Length: 327
Image (tube, rainbow, N blue to C red; front, top):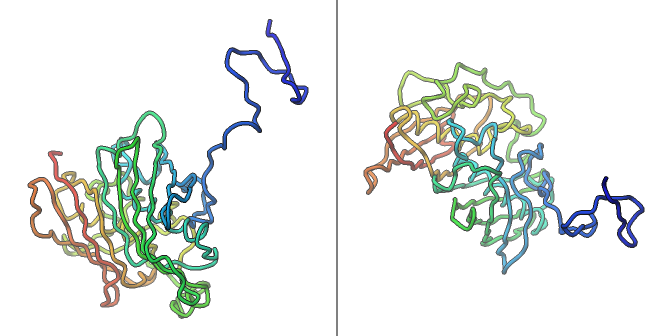
């Protein structure tokens, strides 16, 4: 038989007696939730990796986050580790969140991402028995308004169980919709554009992916050159509508090109430094080229220089760093 008791001043609803102290729901500590999805420019709550923040200094913030154990895209091909590119996406979300939640950038403003770089400790990216809880520290440098534009430089460190898992930086400018429309001209929001047709992608294993759906490169007549050709229906890379290829698509293209250049299965990227020079349009071919950089000081490290060009103009450049291992 179950004994029933009632807490003084509580609603008259019986509850089981237990040895543990009973806490009413409205007396519990603040419960965990994600930050508003709109603040990180995501449509799906499942793609929001931040859970809270507090100011700990002048333009310095402590944030919390969580990476799920199983993600449809940001997981290694063997399913055992988080993807290093997820660190880059998390840094991107930190910048967007602070702009909107702290510095007053209106939600309707568009973000021009000039650079994004990150490096990670692959050992700290192993997936455990529970979701990966993150402690982040963000330092905001030169975060300021200049007229109706807001810009800044962001540095973020990401720790897991007190150990450094990743760190990186981002440089950006936020502009109002009227400025963005002028920048984009005939290709801006609402423009009628016919994107390139999806070609047969290169084999997923050649670029460190598991599924053809996740491959953003199609082959060319050269082993060091590919066509940027992602699936525009991809639920992560094109999680919401875009009038150009998003920056994270270009980061993924750089990673895949580096893997495609080096022997299949033998290269594990852990860091990518990317500069964005121009918009990558959806309706024109963007050619991605890769070349191995000068030898690293350590025999098991490799660096690959990746460049994307469209209509004779440089769209992005990246340096992908990783380790080689016996596949």
